[in-house]
Length: 282
Figure 1 (cartoon, one colour):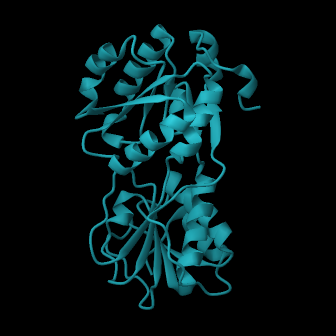
Figure 2 (cartoon, rainbow, N blue to C red):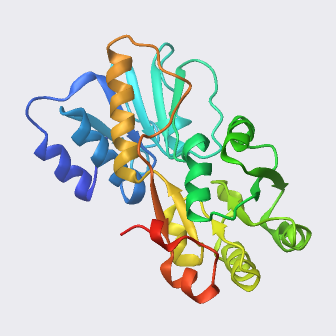
Figure 3 (cartoon, one colour):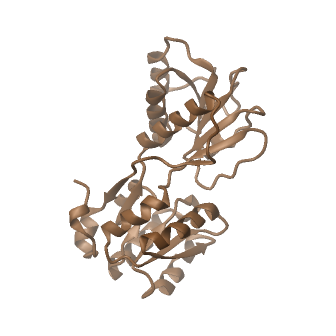
C-alpha cells in the first residue's frame, strides 16, 4: 500500500478495523489541503474504511486487484490510469476531461445553475444582466446549463471566454454598462492573485458584484460565492460510490445538494454593492 504521511496516516490507523474493502479505493492528488479535507468528509459518509492513495508520495500506486469503484480527488488523481471497467467518481478537478478505459462520473464543485442563478438573484434583486467569465474552450456543458436556467431566473447571461488572465482588463472595459454583476467559473488558469486583484478592484470601483467559484476567494476580494463546501462534496462523492457499488447507473455529473451562500461582508459595506442584506448568511 502507498505510504500516507501525517494526518492521512493517522486516519488509516483510526479506521484500521474492520479492514478496508478492496472493491473501492480513494486516490488523492495530495494528502493535504482541500483534497484531504474532502476525503475526510467522504470517509465519514461512507461509514466504512476506504484505502487512500496519495499521489504526491507515489505517482504509480498499486490499486487493489478487486477494484470496482475509485473516487479521485484532484485532476492528477482523476488522470491516473485505472483498470478498464472501473467506475471512477472524480471531483476537485475543474476542467478535467476524462479519457477512455474506465467509466468516469463527476461530482461537481460548482453549484447547479438552476439553484445558483435564483440564489444570486435573491442576493442581488436588481440582477438582470450577468457576465460569466470562463477559459476559452472549457465549461461548455456547464455554460449550456447556465443558459437554460437563465430564463426562468429572469437573468440575461453573457458568457465571455478568455485565453489567459491577461485579457481581464480589456474584457472588463467592454463589460462596463452592460452587466449588473459578473461570475467567474472555476478555471484555474484564470485564477491568480493578480487577476483576483484586477477583478475585485474593478468590482468595487464600479459597484458591480463579483461572484466567485469558491468561498475561499472572498478573502482575495470577491463579493460572494454560492456553492458546496468540502463536506458537501465529500458526502456527495460517498453517495455516488455507494450507488455505483450497488450497480446503480450514475449521472455524468452529480451536483451537491443544499449548496450555501458566502458573502464578503467587508467588501459589501465598503463598496456599496446593491445587495439584499436580509439574505446575508447569519
